[in-house]
Length: 100
Image 1 (cartoon, rainbow, N blue to C red):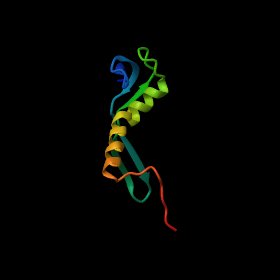
Image 2: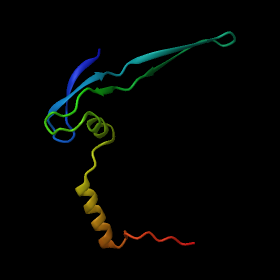
Image 3: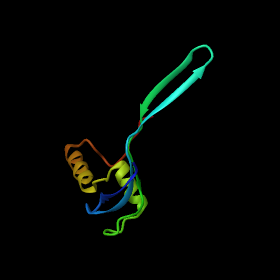
Image 4: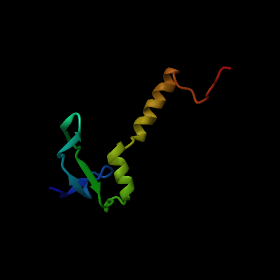
């Protein structure tokens, strides 16, 4: 049930990333003991994407693409706007002051 898929690049939004898709699967685990007998537990594994290549369009490496898909891409412009808004409100200062 493994599929080869093309994913959108998190940086340029074009379908240039090749990956292997592992669908969720239900697995069983059986434990046996002399006194308790046999017990079977079922659990579901998560779906998984294994990235095979980087982006050929924007030039990002395979590690950069994996990190962006796993953790999410940081929006530096948004962070700058938030810091400016906090500075205007007086809630954020560049200096770190500690009391002893």
